Length: 193
Image (cartoon, rainbow, N blue to C red; front, top):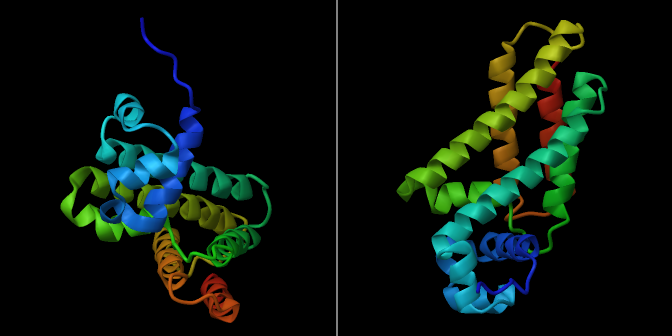
């Protein structure tokens, strides 16, 4: 007869996100996971397989959570420029509100793991495309509403803003100076006309 799990899998997965995000994949040992997740080694293996599979699940969990928050801002159905500004301000607040200066879990995985792991590389590329597509839809709407000029290609603008966001996520690992991020947001918004 199978034993029932005595822990909440989503809660444990969220703890794994925090742990991998803080220490990285290579910096997180199995003992770190056992201690940090509060479950036995056998429960960890039975539920998540191994450290790598848990990392993949944690990365996907992070991606879904971050995507949901940005989608919520977009769904407010406000002017395009205001939507983009709110997304950039939200990202800045999230980054600067983190006393550990972890940056972005997805970007960290891109730098640490993706160069050597095709699955993580694919996840990062899918995430990048999703972020770019979100910005593209907002910019295209802004162009259709004549709020954003057609002087720049909507896809190129979306790629540029997505790249700016990645830069912000890396910059947050070394500075918490809000003025730096305010300048980045202001110049990004100026690019939209």
